[in-house]
Image 1: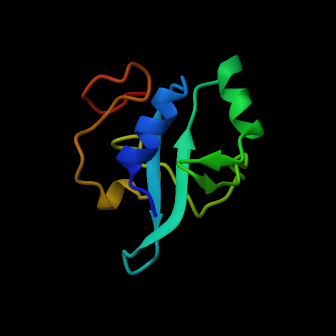
Image 2: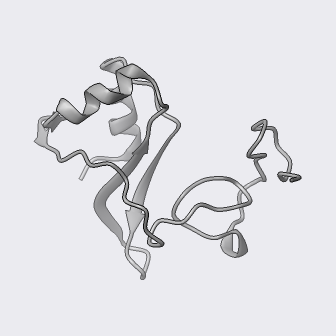
Length: 103
């Protein structure tokens, strides 16, 4: 199982930009061999669907399905946890500054 840093380095080396990389965890906190990579909506990002290998291992790339299993925190805007459990600094959804989003 590769670390998020190793995946980040490999994606950067291949010329991909990404918004976030999140390792999914089991309910007990143990890491799973599943990683969510959030890519910007640009043409280069579409090429990732043609990839079947990363760091010498076979991979499967899928579009994120709308599911309540991977929620987005309304405090830090990262995925995989809820605002009520978040200890990260706030991040504005509109401008990405370090403050809560004011709608």
